[in-house]
Image (cartoon, rainbow, N blue to C red; front, side, top):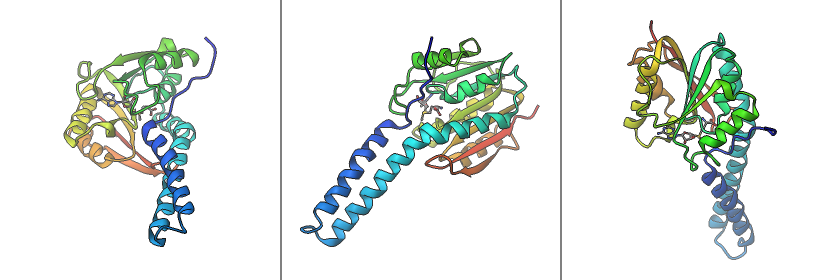
Amino acid sequence: MKGTPRFGIDAPGLVLGFAIGGPLLLALGLGGSAILPPALAGAMVYTGAVLAAEAVLMALSSLRGKPAVLRRMVAALALRGDEQVLDVGCGRGMLLLEAARNLPRGRATGLDLWSTRDQSGNAADATARNAELAGLRERVRIDTGDMRRMPYPDASFDVVISSLAIHNLPTQTDREQAVREIARVLKPGGRVALLDFRHTADYARTLRANGLADARRHGPNFLMFPWVWIVRGHKQA
Ligand SMILES: C[S@@+](CC[C@H](N)C(=O)[O-])C[C@H]1O[C@@H](n2cnc3c(N)ncnc32)[C@H](O)[C@@H]1O
C-alpha cells in the first residue's frame, strides 16, 4: 500500500465554525461600521479576528504542533522496544504509530470509540490503513471500546499513553473512571504519559490516589493550541 498516513483535524466542527464565523463577523463589523453603533462594530471585528485566529491555530496545532509534541512525548518514555503499550482514545493513530515505531519487539494497542466529532474521518479502518502506510501494521492492535470500561484484564500494559482524549468525557466522574481504568490496566512498575489541554491536574490527582504516587503534570507546552500539559507517573511495583 502506498501513500502517507493522514491523521485528520481535532474538533473539526469547532474549527470549521470558527473558520466560517470568524471572517464573517469580521467582514460584517468592518462593512457595517457606517451604520452600526461603534461599540457593536468594534466588538464584531475583535471577536471575528479572535475566532479566525483560533481556527488557524487549532488547524496548525493538529497538523504541525501535535506531531512534534507527540514525538517528544514518546522519546521521553525511552522505550526498551519490547513493551505492551496502550493508547487510550487513539483516533487515527498519530500517537499510536509513534509508539509502534519504537516497539520492534512489542505491541501498541489503540482503544477508541471512533467519534468523528472529536477527530475528522475517525474510524478503525482509517487507523488500520495509517498503520499499513507507515509499515507498522504488524506491531499495532486496534480495539473498539470505551475508556471508562476498558476490555482488558488488570495489569495488562507496561505503558499507557493518551493524547487529547480524556477531556472529551462529559463529566468529572466519567474522567475519573477512565483514569482509574488506566491505573487498573497498568502493570506494577508501568508508566503513564497523558497529554491534554484541560483537567490534567485532576488526572494527576486520580492517578496518585490509585497507585501512582509520583504522578504529576509537566508543562504547559505552547507548540499546541490550546496549549497542553503531560501527566507522567509510574505505578508502584
Ligand atoms: C481529539 S481525538 C484525539 C485522537 C488521538 N489521540 C490524537 O491525538 O490524534 C479524541 C479521541 O478520543 C476518542 N474518545 C472519545 N470518547 C471516548 C471514549 N469514551 N472511549 C474511547 N475513546 C474515546 C474519540 O473517538 C477520538 O478518537
